[in-house]
Amino acid sequence: MTDRAPDEPDEIGDPVCWLSRVCPECGAFITGDPADGCPRCGAIPDDER
Ligand SMILES: [Zn+2]
Image 1: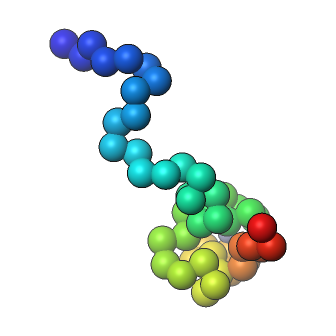
Image 2: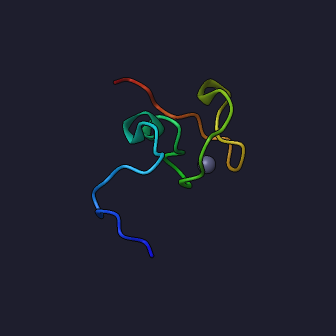
């Protein structure tokens, strides 16, 4: 039986942190250094924020 609240955080770290690691071009998750660019399309995330 799964009886947990829908808004209860599971083991999700910090979704906000992920935003800078998601490719703005193709949406791939960049696991390495974002400065190296997207491993799929090569786009470099714009981290002007
Ligand atoms: Zn990409």
